[in-house]
Image (cartoon, rainbow, N blue to C red):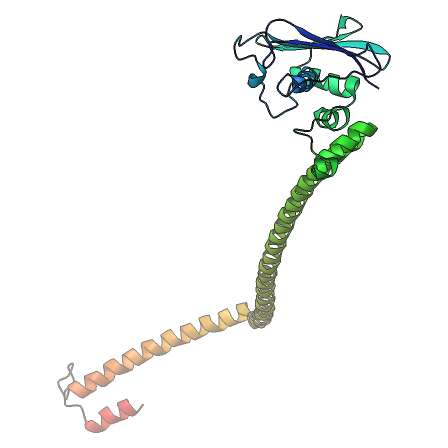
Length: 309
């Protein structure tokens, strides 16, 4: 539970350098009344600005600065919650944002956005949407709860019931789902690539097997041809060996045959010599009619008897 104690502002909208302070814990209920334009809504703008850095109405941050002074806009609010006292100070030109817990400044090492989250999540336990729907209600810009968008209604309910963890879990789950989808897509792509590589390897293996079978068939054909040629060669070799054996048998009486041939050659020379003598004698008788020794005529009967012999 938040118990506001006071709020103070200066140079905000139509207010000037003189600080305006409202004590909110003097009574159980504080009523602020006034005519239109007297600054009642300025209190709401000041409260939302100091806590969330934006106005309650549709006014930009720069429009919150007093148009005459043009600087030194400053708002301070004090409240109690969770057993501690807090004071929040926020300003424009210069920009100021400070959170005090029991009059000690909470470290500002974090970035401005993170410093704001400390105020909303750890101290107020609600964000701007929930604050303007539950804590402050303005007739000029109030939007009924059921007219809010689904995300804004969920945001208000989570802040009221302090169950923002479920939205955080939902966001984390969505991120995990997206990450899982990306991982799944990558896995599917990897699977498809692997299938493509496998199909390519299968095709290569098939081609290699076909080539191998053709090569094996070619080698087998050459082997068969070589075996056939070997058989023919062996058969020819056997025939040659048989012929060699026959020839060896035929030349086993070589010496005898050589003696017969020598004797035949001797006889041939003798017969040749005799034939030459006979041819000479026949030639003599054919070409001569008288004996060259005695010059007597050679009778024809004697010629024929000698030729016949």
